[in-house]
Amino acid sequence: MTMRTRGSARTAAAAAVAALLVLSGCGSDDGAGEEPKQQEQEEQQDARDGDDGDEEGSASDDEARDQESRDRIAEDEARSITGEGLDGVWESIVDDNDIETLTITGDTVETTGPLSCPGTVTGAADPEPVIELACDVENPNRVRGTLELNEEGNRLFIGWEGQAWGGMIDSMIRVG
Image (cartoon, rainbow, N blue to C red):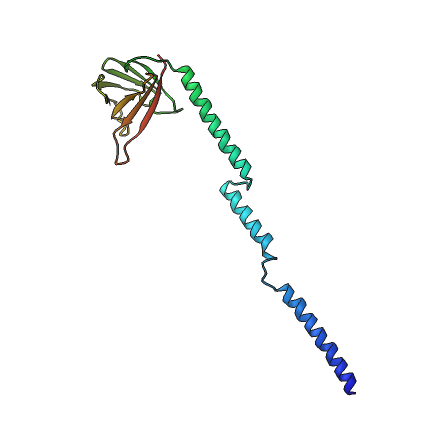
């Protein structure tokens, strides 16, 4: 009976070890069971962030935006005309800008668009001429600013006075 007990004990021990191995394998923390869950969570986060996980897709989106920008600049250049001095009709390069066009004649200014009003230019021959708008409905972001004309005479930049961050900047092309 001792033999039989030892054999039964060995069988029981072997069964217990096998059961322990099976149970410990199921509960192991080797991360194998978590990979799909972690990947799923990352995909959900990417979807919320607008990232489809395709790095090439993101790169091609950036390239498309860059090409769009280059096309817009080329279109502006094609529409702009060169000239001397500030006199002329200037159009904003930004869609839906508060100032759609700016007409400068001598020291007189007229704007069109949501911010349509008269104004003046002082120091047109100075390195930094000053523009001041006299609008019925004042726009605190565009009251007084400095004008900068590029070398070709086809682009005008207006640096408006503003908060500590420096104020708004309008970029315009000469169209007339």
